[in-house]
Image (cartoon, rainbow, N blue to C red; front, side, top):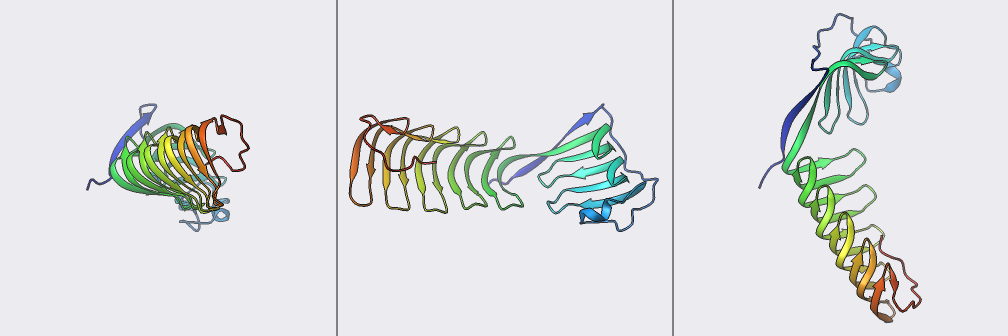
Length: 226
């Protein structure tokens, strides 16, 4: 099995990098994890880690990064350089990890992707679960669902079929928690082409669809898959 390979890349701002040699005293209470602690830091060097995993090590003034400092984000980006009033300013170097191969990426709010990567994007086979209960298992292309896949929702809805540019497109099957079921063509996330809709009570419509509607304009008392 291939593994996720982080490749360290760098870009320079003003073609110069900054050193981390401190001439100021340490901030009181450093390192800190609560916002209210470092708001009073000024003319000192401190370390702060946010609840989201961000980390700053460097000089502070009036409670903000100011002077030399290093800021690291949990998704692999890193900036080493000068700051002014909490913003990158002047000279510095940025680094980021490029993901290639097989790997897992998780976010603090609960989303998680396990699968293949190409040039920092989900590409190939992969599974993405979301904090709201949504789950997609299937093919990806340039960070979008593309190809064959299965999408399930916490409310009982399920789609199995083809995707294009992140949307159901091609042939697929949509099943609802009510027991209703649609099998047929999709275009940009709507029923399109030949398809069959079967109600849980046994009723059935077979025919052509266009932009989510039956071509014969028959009543359609059911939702389009979203």
